Image (cartoon, rainbow, N blue to C red; front, side, top):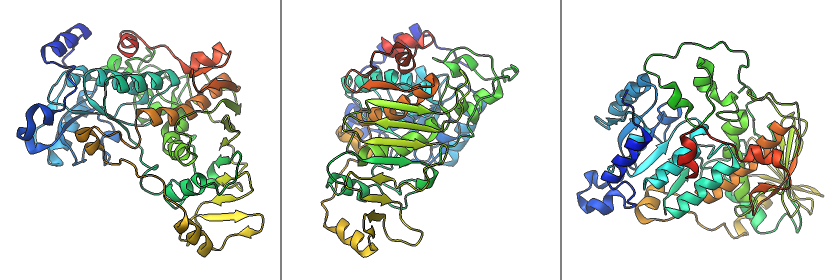
Length: 442
């Protein structure tokens, strides 16, 4: 496997005008191959083969990389089977970023790489399609948001329930729930939101690391040091490097890391909270191991206006509605054979006809930019971008910090730091291993 030093990468970048922000269609006009934007995949595990990455036809796949040579070879074969022909295999992602032919970078790695790679891609003049969660910490997310904005890059986070598809476990899209909140049907005052098994949301507590695993021999062709990247160095085990990486704090945060951006990003949108973050996080549950992710019983996030989001881990709130308004109006998932969500007030359940009529009469939410390729071509900010994605990621990153502390804390949504709590801040702003810390923070 070809090795590229940071110095060599920067030298190559300068020679190829890496830091130009113009996409290929601007550089080459109508002569661009297939008149399409181009893209390359960083990481070729399971998620890279999902519909929005390898098979995606909206832009042309021209390359991929992975620190495991066996995955690279599998990726090349899979690309050919999907009609992309012979694509490039980069020695590592820095060579990919240095390629002026790549317009869009798909970041399909474990989450401990998302922040650093997003920053490096933005600095390299690439638009970015990043897997969820956006980042592991508040500090990483803040940095991604700042650099993407400064470099005028387009950014898409790979979850979509705020603008299309059925909301997990709810049976409808998010739009009618946003209508209800946006138009004040839940009254003037704080809203209580409950998320858990009773509301259709599973936290996947099966993701947990192994604390006594015996170090194993690194497979041939696997650059373990590159896989670890900004994470602390640890001996190789197949459990760490496999799909079970989500069970280790160094790389992810269990079920919260796996699913919370899917759940909480639409929630943030429907609550009209895209511009802010909770001011208080409370935690109830067992003490966490410093390396291996465990379960939680209850995480409660409270906003400045008193609105609360309760993550029900011990399944004691199954009977609660998804939303409970200040006026007592409650919103529940669609019934099995129903046509839309259910509403209940102090007088009982609304007839479905009344729900449908009410929704039909309410103004709909503003249209969203939902075509990422159009975003890249015409420089239109995507519906789920580095700014609102950062805010939804912050929701569960606050919960993760509380989990690891074993207690709650206050948070300032303006300064983006814990309030008078250095211990909490250490989880919100974690260090990175060199040399990636310099790439991240400059």
